[in-house]
Structures are given as C-alpha cells and as structure tokens.
Image (tube, rainbow, N blue to C red; front, side, top):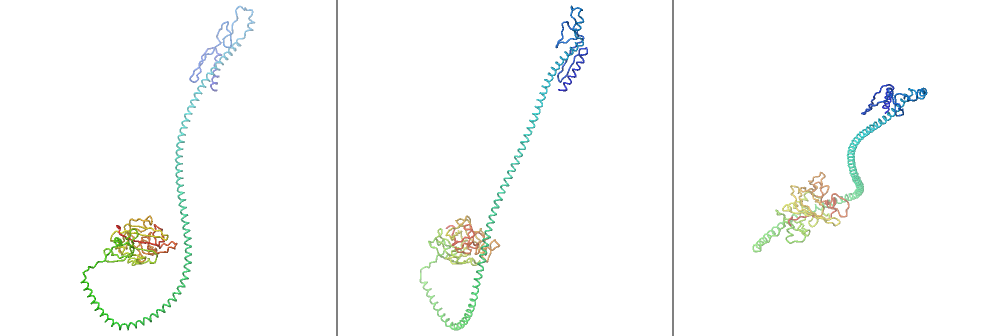
Length: 504
C-alpha cells in the first residue's frame, strides 16, 4: 500500500508539472486489471465569460475583464481592487490542487476498496488452501494415528497373551513347587520315622544279642548234656547189639513158624477162592469224581475232604471241597487262616503240595495244572481282613501250564469287590520260589516278598507271603498282599483260592 501511495504522489507531481505547462494532455494509470485515464484542467489560453466567477469548484484560465460603463475613471481603483494575475493563477492552481486532491482521495478510496476486496479474496483463497492442506494433513494424521493405534492394540494383545502365559506358567511352577515341598515334607517325615524305627531296631538288636548270648550259653550247657547223653546212648547201643546176636539165634525158630503160617494162609486163600466161585452176587465198582463240582451235583452238600480222580489219569487225590460259598462245588487250591503252616518253601513243595487239607495248605502245582487244563475253570479268591471285612475276586477263565512252562498263569475276565482292577499279574507270568527264580526282577521277588507266587516284577499280589497276626500294625512288604483292595499290606486273617467248572 505504501508503494502504491508513493507511485500516486509521483504521478501527482508529474500532473502539476504538466499543468504548469500550457498544453492539455491525457494521463493513464494502470493498476492491476484496471486502467484509469485523467484529463486535468488547463488555465492558460482560456477566455472566460464576463459573468464567470471563480469558485472552489470552477476554474478559469485568465483574470476577468472590466465591466463596460464603469469608464476609464476608475482604472487605478480597479487595478487596485483586482488581484494580480499571478495571484489569480496561484488561486487557480490551489483550486486545481484541491480538486486533484479530492480526485486522488476518491481514487485512493476506490483503490483501497479494490485492494481490500482482492486481499480478502486472496486471504479467503489462502485460508481455503491452508484449510484443505490442514484437512489433508489431519486426514493423514488420523490414518497414521489409526494405524499406530492398531499396531499398539496388536502389541498390547501380544503383551497380554504373553503375560497370561507367563502367569499360567508361574502358577504351574508354584503348584509344582508346592507338591515338591509336600513330597519333601513327607519324605522328611518318613526319614524321621525310619530313623526312629532304626534306633528302636538297634536297641532291640542289642537286647536280642544280650538275650541270645544268655541263650547261647544255655545251649552250650545243653550241648554238653547231650554229649553225655550220646555217650550213654552209645553204651546202650552196644548192649543192644549184644542182644541182637542172641535174637539172631531165635530167628531160626521163627522162620520155621513162618513156613507153617504160609501153608495155613495158602489153605485159607483156596477156601476164599472156592467161596467166591460159589457166590453169584456181582461186585459193585466204587464211584469216582473229577472234581468237587461233580461231588456237589451228586447231592453232597457238606464241605469237607473228598477223593477225586484227576482227568486223563488213574491218580486219585484228596481235596477239600467248599459246598457253601456261592452255590458250592469249589475245589480248594489254597487256604490260610492262622499262620500255622510255613509257606516260604522251595519248588518241590509247591509242585507236590503241602499242609493239612482241613486247615492251611497248598494243593500242589501239578494237581492244579492237571485239574484246570482238562476243561474251562473259573477261579474264586475269597479274602477277609482283621476288621472282619470280606471281599472276593472272580476270574471266569483260569488255568496254569505244566512244569515245562514253569506253571505259567492264565487268568481273564476279572470281576468282584476286591479292588477296582485285578491284583493278579498278567497272563503268562511264571511261578517262582525261593530256590527257583522266574520273575522279571533282578531283586528275586520270592526271597524279598517271601513264599511262592506268580510275581512277574514283584507284582501287586502275593497270597503266600508271611502270615502276620492281626494285632500287628507295622507295614510289612513280605506279608500277604492283594494291592488293589487294601494296598501293599493286607493284614488278612483268611485267604482262599478255589476253582470249579465255568459252566457249573
């Protein structure tokens, strides 16, 4: 704006210079798209009318002439009253300057209005451009912000997932640590208990050594007494040998008497044969049964000892028959009730059998094999603990192989109340005793757990272990065991193993 005013002032100065000249000229000013043309008044060479008067809005080129009729008498006075030409021209110039100043003010106002409107349009265009740029920048910023927000959300999700996994792992480690602490505490308690038990056993061992020392001294004195008795018996034997010599002399007479008796017996046999020929009554053959089931089916209802003839054999054996349990007809293979019979025996004893049929006994592996391999038999195991609780395990199919296969066990289709699953070892497990180890453990289960049994790797059962009295409360791992009913130590008062045909 200041530069425009300077140009305007310079132009006005030019107009004044032209006005001073005597020639009328046109002047043009270019401002942007607009062009302005000015024609300034010229006071020279102009002859105004007589009645023309100079005012603020009119101009003239020369002073006014004198009025006619005033006469020549007043020229001096008119000359004095009328201003000089220079003054008049100066007034004309002042009036023209004033008019030009008004025109310039109007021109300035017009230019200012146009410039103001142009500036406003330029400002609006600039504001619009800046607004569009700012909107575009805002849109870009919003897009970038949304992308960054999405990335931050993904990162936050990953962090939360990782934190959750770490918390879960930490919780698992905490639970595992708690279990380990409990296990360590139990092991510490067990070690403490074993230490106390060891101390007790050491004290007991010392007491036993002291007592057995005294007993050893007593045995030595008894040994001396036995030696003296042996000497006396030797002398007595010598006397008996002397008497035997005299008895030999008497044997001749006895032989003669024997010959006479032989003749008499022959005569009696001849008489008996003669009587048999006279008798016409046929002789009845005795009845024979394969097992207790046939005895039960013949009408016998009382439990007891009976004779049976093994299948495919002429061998007759005595067995105990249970005629009461679950319909009867059971052939008892094993029975324990009071610990009166030692079951920690060798292979031969378990092969042939031992004990009393009316009490504790093992029927014998040879007999069990011949009996159960003739047809399908089911096995029934009856158990009773020291509290009087009873349970049983039933196997619908049972037999054992012969000695050539170490009496391998075959028991299938378990049912019963003595545990959720079978305590007998798997099919094919071989029989072991203290002098014949056939198990799958290097520890020799028969010696460790005691008795003869189908141990496999010491296994979950052993009904032939050591019989401990019901009053004992110490856990012993070589006692009678049926694991899935009462754990490692049964504390049983009665065990019975018996078989009968599966189709009974």
